[in-house]
Image (cartoon, rainbow, N blue to C red; front, side, top):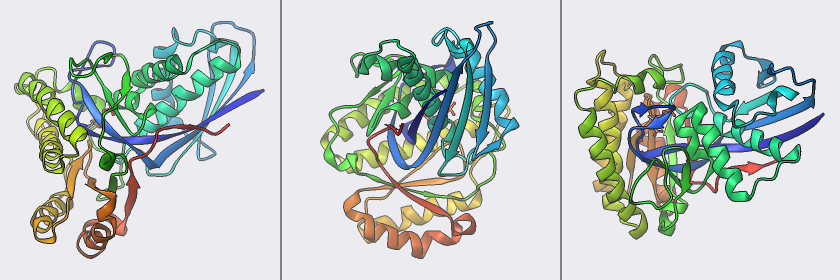
Length: 343
Ligand code: PMV
């Protein structure tokens, strides 16, 4: 019996992926900060068996069987079958744990699917196939994408982009790229996730993506995302915090505006989400702090700020934002270097 383990962080999109086509391909390119403290650790053990064409996989979350995850996992293994044709020759055991609540709008599917994809690539190496470093991460990104689009970006830190764009040479809808040319200030940027709602989302992101298909504003949204990517690329390279703030917040608002104008329409923000956003917008000028809000497909607010402003911002969070958090719950995180193989 052999085993591999990867620790893989979640990510927070700055330019959002919302809407897809074909085999889990994005309708527009996206870019994200790779996080650090919010991560998944996945261990994969594998033991040879007769290759009778059937997959034998067991799955545990925090040491407990998790039947609710099994359908998603089955779909994932069907999709990656041709990438890892050796899998039916093994009995697979997956053990996974998260440092943050799953299905709460913190992208647990991103870290979870990317951790699993990295384990499968490591398994491929262990059983004797050669994969160069570049091919290893590219393949992991492709496999992760097939599980969850945003997961494609979690295999690289500190920033990753996914989706074909003339702005990034070598970019593709199939896999993510590590983003170079980033000002140092963004490589240590902080992200405090203000947990407004720890429950499961009432509309899954796969349903959300599918509602873009006949969305009246979709073509404009995809154009705007491409324009925002260009603006953000410049802001990231120059360390332009004003432009960064403007693009990132507009992206968050546009993502949720698309949800509110889908047919059927839905709303993932809670009153506390709005209260936090307003408090940040009211206070930041007066306090002279570079605080930017962004949202994922959920009610929680990500507050982004430079590491140099950490003490002041965290004091502000404690004093002003904590009352809006569910059970005073928040997670201090920061931009990280990407996944790590642990065994
Ligand atoms: O990867 P998915 O299918 O869970 O979609 C994620 C979509 C957003 O989190 C809202 C945006 C993004 O680019 O991560």
